[in-house]
Image 1 (cartoon, helix red, strand yellow):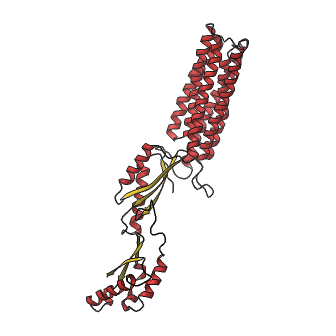
Image 2: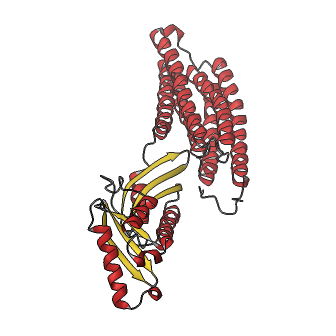
Image 3: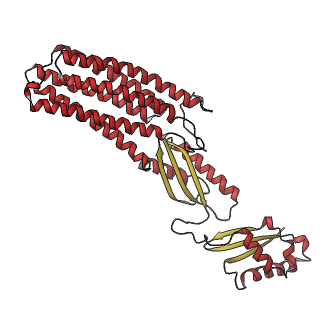
Length: 398
């Protein structure tokens, strides 16, 4: 069972949360798309009219946001779908794949911009000479894209979406690239005509760096890289704080979209009941998810002994076989017919089986007879050939 941490005041049952999350993402992305379209066209037109290669490159960068905005909308819609039979862990990695696509697209755009600028630097007659129109449009772009960045980042934090956060930084990259464009235009207007092409290369390098960072981070998720060390330390502390946990091992973490998944083995008292062990595991699960907001699902394995290096009890026979052997051994003992098999408890520890049986004291003639019966049961089960896997038999009376 998976649990997600949702913003307060948002419906969490059924698909309510995911629908609200998608609607919020769609709204902010559509607003950003409208701005990208207007700015992209304005930059390219102003770049040609105002003779600024850097501004044209920046305009292409803005228009590329339209394609990535489409990827964002698709991923948010389908990545937020609930788990189903074919996708028991949900669809969160659709967002991961989309973020990688976004990063690779940015790198491709950067290569194209840089290549064109380098060609112009090699052929000075191709250099452009920007003017005031290019400067004004680039300045407007800085303000507009920074506003979109702040808005998108706020929504990304509210809905805990790495994809929206990536798209926000895409907008921030547009704002920063426009700053570089302004510097290049000012330099070119001052007589240093090559600065416009150099600014275009600066834009390309920055876009490539952001794209590479996005793609690399999401690729780590696809190969199940562990969560951040500080988060793993929080998880470990949460487990150890639960009463009944003696130790833990085989702690494994991974990410799926914005969700953190945890697997862990915990060591408990081997003599407690199955239901108590289960209760401890559920408490561990709840404690982790309460203390570490990034974690949305936890699988807890209960161990009666440390099996990290080896499993000494793995080759031992199971319950039905053990009880059948014991019945054969105890066939000559009259008290054995009164043993309540459903109350018989087997403990698999250190490569041996420890047996606990329950006998009704009312069936015994006196306490001496009861003790004699218990001795006979232990002797037949542990001191005869072929029963080496049984460590001891504890007889309890009621």
